[in-house]
Length: 494
Image 1 (cartoon, rainbow, N blue to C red):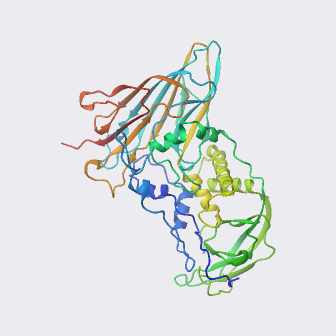
Image 2: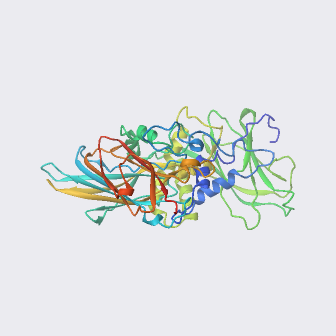
Image 3: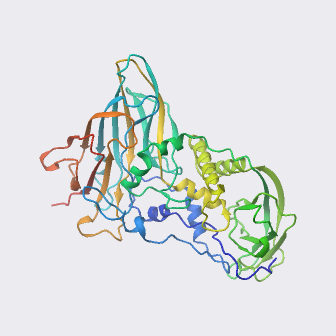
């Protein structure tokens, strides 16, 4: 099977690392920073693995554009940072009547940052309280939703909701990832992108849709019990390669656990992986065929990933089974989460649904693929690290003529510039901003903004109207103004 045309299409062992991973490596670290997701660590480790003789043609995304150089031209009256954390967004009615009268008060509590160093001003506690009035003659039973920006792999940013002081039983609605095409940057990068996504209600409508079951039958080849002879690992990296031929018009191939491969003429393919050494973590090696599976294959061992010098004694057991694509993906998500993390049951269903939605987008007619292959590591890592808007939802009853008070509390990270690029008047700036009505169907009247425990801060830019030097830390906002922002830094010691 090594007679493949030398002008091979090389593909990534792991897809282009999402820019969110690059940003995370550069983020300022604070005491409340959650532990990085193992899925993302695995993805980054794989992306930096050099596959000898095969190569990876896109290890890192381009260091430019919005994430590396800011979110475009700085607009008057707005905050622009290289890494944008998203605004504090308003409560909405997910299921129920629109236009209910409401008042809102948002508080940013900087108390936990009082002892921070100048370059590590980090997350603040946000308390967002909404008073909803039932101005009708009948009792209302509604489903409310409070939106924040989060990822499936890091859900510490999700709020707790209380209604009239009592903890609300909640569930989650996850929005779509990214801001553009199928494999675009997996985050919304500016206020303008949030506005475009949320303004017409279609983003929430998509989030409310059930994930597709993906009932297409797939044939799965699984390689287990991989073995290789003892070698000098400073000179060799024993590699197992499996080759076969498929009808590329009729069959799509997904892979899991392979380090490299090549495509040849007439549907000839070869996939390979480094045989784990003693003590290394075992992982599943799957070839998944959507369509007709090959009738035969070859399996060969090589000294390294170039797959040029044969090596005797390299082998693996091959087994095959059939299932549906949806069940397979759900199983892989469950294995990945339970292997690395504790207390994942509450996020399992949402992660499985998001992965199936992403897979459906991949399989959609005329989907734009970055490469001619389907790497399941890409699907899992992209879907889990992608930033998206998620609504924490719950059912609320409001008696006729009465009000309820809904309070959301959560940790909100700042927007920031990378340390290597910030300087001058923007040195050590952090940003927080507010969308007054974006994505909400409530009829907001009074909206109040408050700062607490802010005596150690100075405001470098804002449009709220706070005056810290005069003790003005509470202001009433104009509901007709869509967007408010503040740029904050710690005071310099005198």
